[in-house]
Structures are given as structure tokens and as C-alpha cells.
Image (cartoon, rainbow, N blue to C red; front, side):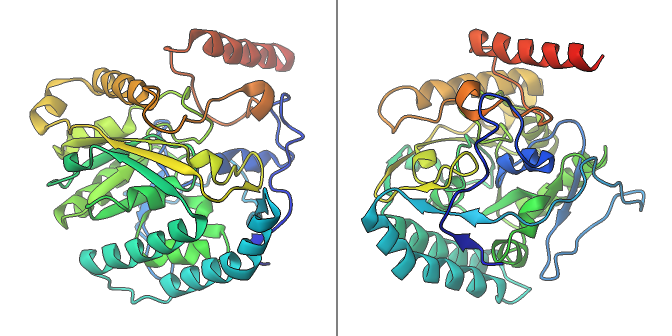
Length: 356
């Protein structure tokens, strides 16, 4: 199955109804990121895709049945975009993925950083992404636990333009993606199965400690979703920083959803602006002095205020009537958006009433 197709993506027939065609597809919105709903399984990825198991030696199966690898479809918005994708884009994407998947299994942090940056620069260049960067001077030192807003798969190559050595946490289903999965595995990023059991946090701590000890920063997406700015931060990333005694580096990302609208639509646009603002790091004494929930609330408020300040491209906004309610997928609405929060809660109450 080809990895890049030009057609429709995940069906939008669920929009306004909150139910994708494939019930297992509800977990695919997370992209490369981290969502800790209090449980899950985490492992380091190797060239073979293997990694550490649970601390008790048992494997806890996921609650959702496995689904076939998705067809990552692209639909350029303009005729020029069609020509650009077919003549240059698809060959480039395939070549980059295969090159990364063929790298040596024992990459050093410096080698991993170089290879990732090269691939990201090629991808951003092909797409004509115009990065609007603010606060780059804050991305010095570390290593950090990087917490970033999440609205697109373009967030990862945007983050890789920072002067940091980065390792990411990826949802396990990304490993099933053709070409992309083997590349991520060979680069040694972390794999997360949030639905699989309570051992996730312990394993994330173990893996994160090794990442930081090697001089790399651990990049996490506390929203765990690309639904939009209104999705609430989960506490896992902030608890990880506290337990690892690591400084936090907040990074605001906006506009990536305009490049590729996956999973809501296959629409692809060239030449779009993508915003990246690095906020001042939260030093270790502050991380340790605040409960994770209090730190989560403070950092979330600052990051979203920066996203809406008007000097970056507009962030993605979640509209359940357009995007669907994603029934069965775990996410919460930030209390700072009370009207939307009430709407989503009313939907969930209705569903519980129907199934009672």
C-alpha cells in the first residue's frame, strides 16, 4: 500500500455526529505526541521496533482492537499543488522515509539530530512553509522536557528547527504507518500505548531519564490531540518534569493545521505560515515548588495566551459541529472555554443516558 495517496482522507461523514467510520480511528488524531490518561505502555523503539516491556514482565493488551495501517492521503488545494506533489513531493517523502529507516541502529544523539534536521528542512522546504519564529533565544541549554501545543503533524519538523537535540513520544499506531513507522523506529523515539495499562508512567519516567541523561530533550504534547486550542492539557508531562527534576520549555505552535488538515480532511496547502514561539523555560526550582496540576494550569494559560496574541498565524480552533465529537476518544476541554466545555459535556451526558 502506498504511503502517500491523493484522494480523500479519513471520512468526514462523522462531522457533527462525533463518530468516525472506523471506531478504531478515533485514536489516530493524536499524531506524534504524548497523552497520559493515567495509564499506558511506553517503550524505546529500536531498529526492529522492539523495546522494553512492562516492569512486571507482562504485556497488557490495548483496549481497542488493532486497526489496519491508515492510508495517508493528500489532496492539494490548487492545480499547481497537484503538480508539485506528484512531480516532487511524493518522491521526496518516500526517499526521506526510506533513508531514515535505513540508518544505523546505534545512532548517537548528534547523528540523530543531524539526520532529523536534514529531513525536516527538506520537508518544510518542499511545502514552502514560512516559519514565523519568536523567542528562539530561550531554546538554549537544557536538556528540557519540552511541552508544545499540538495541531498538526507539521509540529514535529517545526520543532526540529530549534537548536535542541530532541526525542519525541509517538503513539504506537504511528508505527503501523507505511514508511513513516520504520523511520520513527530507527530514529529511536519513544512509543506510547495510552490504553494499555498503568505501567506507562513508570516506563515513561525510565525512558525519559535515559533521554535526558544522554543530553537530549524530551518533547511531549500535553494536549494529546490535534483537535484544537481548546483541548485541555493533561498532567502527565508536568509530572514527568517534576519526577525527573528537569526544566520545562513551553513552545507555542500555530498554523500547521493549514498545511495538512489530516485527520479531518486530506487537504494539502503549499506556502503556508507556521508560527513557533518559545516561551521562557520554567527552571527546576519552580517545577519542584508547584503541584503538577498547578504547574499545568499556569503553563497552559501562558501558552494559549501567546497563541492568541495575534503575532503568530491563527491556531486551530475546535468546532465539534464541523470536526465531530470524537466519541470514545479521551480528551477534555480547557475550562477557559466554558461554552464549548458545556457543549461537549452535554454530548457525553446524552450518550451515557442513551446507553444506560
